Length: 298
Image (tube, rainbow, N blue to C red; front, side):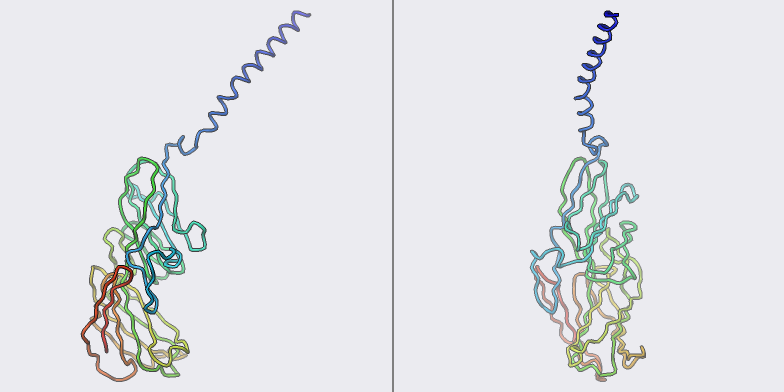
């Protein structure tokens, strides 16, 4: 009987010893980084600069301005062999806004990033097709390049502007019965190709702007954006003054309006007076921190 007890005790010691020896092996196995185990690499995308910082009412904004002051939404999509493998949207309420991190397998990827100031995220269906909620455009920037991925890396995103702006300034007072201004324009695009950097459809764009009390005394300013089909393009802009019932009180058509990527085309004059449109000598200026602008007087 004692011999059996001795054998049992020895067996128990051996079993405890084997279990003790195996513990470090099990621990080491579980300490392996899951991403390394899967063979993935870590990419960090950081918005670093914008091609031309927008300005508001003529005030210059520095390149050092926080990304939250430039745009409200950022969307990133990664495509591998034409298939979208990653899609991430951010809005300015997030703490890491402007910094996007992903894990992917090594390989070649097309990277598309869209930053804009609209109310919802852009939809990146493919590098050649980027659309916006309700086809409404705001100041928009993009990044589109092919990235070879073999190891962890950080990518600085230098964003280029994707739009042109048409700005109308009414020198004269706005009549009391006019409650809104409608700008209907054709010739541009509301869908974007991030590979070419230009618009890719023929759009009919309509924007309604409520007339504020502060605008009635004169120099009211109304702005709309479009995506040119090439570096330069031409719009037809119909501007309608509407009353509270939505009826047209006064209307003026601006034909052959020249627009250019990253440029403001500004029309300024007495809108409600029956003066024939006359193009003045244009004034163009360019600096590293604001839009280029061309002005016409009507």
